[in-house]
Length: 450
Image 1 (cartoon, one colour):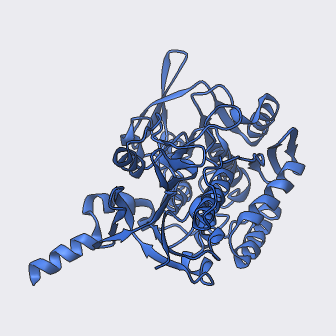
Image 2: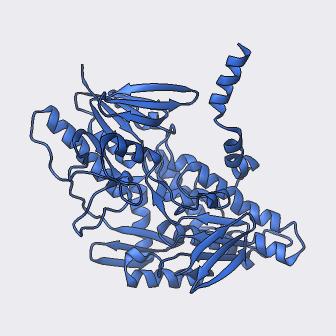
Image 3: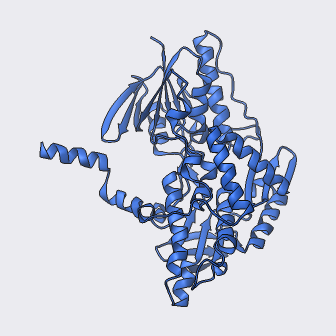
C-alpha cells in the first residue's frame, strides 16, 4: 500500500504541497470545504465588479486533473485522532473518516473581529467568495437604493462606505470603492451624484499599510486622499449595527451613519487549529495559530505538518512569519520535500527557510506600492509589478487571459464587467444561518418521511 497523505485545505499551501508530490509514491486525499481553489488577494476585485468569481477560483478537480495520485473530497474536518491517525470530516449531509500516514493541515485563516463576532452580521469580512459576492451586492445596491430616496440624511447614509482595516485588503477595497463612485458610476444615476459618496478607511494602528515602511505608507495615504478616501488612523471600532458604525479616537466616540461596512481588520486561525493543538498537546498563540517545529511539523508528531496561516513559526527577524501567499507556497513545498525524504530513508527535520519576495498593494488604477527587498516602488512602476505578480499566481491560462481583458476594461475604460448583484447574494448568509445546514435538514426531513 502506498503512503497515505491527507491534505486539509486547497489554498496555496495545500495545493503546492500536492503538486510537489505528483511523482512521489503516495496516495493523496485532499479535503476542502469548497470545490475550488481561491486566490484570496483578488477577492476585493470580485467585490467591486472587476473580476468574476470564476477567474480567481478555478475548480480543484480541473487544476489537479492530470495528477492521478489525488482523490478530491468535499468536506470540513471536524476532528483529528492523532493516535489512530484518522481525520473526521463533515460533508454536505454526510459524515466520513479518512485514515492517514502523513497529515498536512493548511486550512488557511478566518476573519477576526477581535472578540466582537456580532459585528459580522453587519460588516462582512473578505475571506471567501460568499463574502465578496455579498459585498458586491451591498456596494452596488447602496447606490441603487440611494437613488430612490429623497431625504438627504437617508441618501447620505446609503452613500457612506466604511472600510475597517488599513492593511493591503482594506486599502485596496477603499481605493476601488472610491474609483467606483468617482469614475465608473459617474453620471449613471438621475437623482444622486455618485461622486458625493463618502468613503472612510479606519484602523486602530497609526498608519496605512504600516508593514510597508514609513515612505510607502505615506505615499499610499497621499494617493488615497487624492482619490477622496478619508483615512482615519488610531481609530478603533467599538460598535457596529445595521445603520451605523461607532468609532473611538483620542478618547472620543463618534457614530457614523452608514449602511455599508467592510471588515478587513484582522485574521485568526480557524477552529480546526484549536482542536488539532488540543489533540496533539501543542501550543497556540493569541491568534490561534499552532506553534510548530522548525520544519513545520507538530512537536511530538513528525507525521503532522501545519502550514501557512495556521502555523506560528519565527522568521529571521524573530517574529512570526506573516500570513501571506508566499509563506503558504514555500511551506507547502517544504513539507512535501520532508515527506519525500522520509520515504526515501533520508534524514529529515531540516528547518523551513522563508524567502521574502516582497509585499504589494494596489491603491487605484495605475497606482500601487511595492516593497521588494531593499527596493521601494510606488505609482505606475509598482502597479506594473503588481499586475505581473498577480497574473503569475493566478491558476490557469484561461483565468489569466480573462483577467487581463477585464483589467483592460476597468483600468483603461470606465466599465466594470461584473456588476450583477442579487438579493440572494446580499442576504443569503443570514438566511442560511437561520435555516441551518440545508443538506442535514433535508436528510432529517427525509428520515422523518421514511
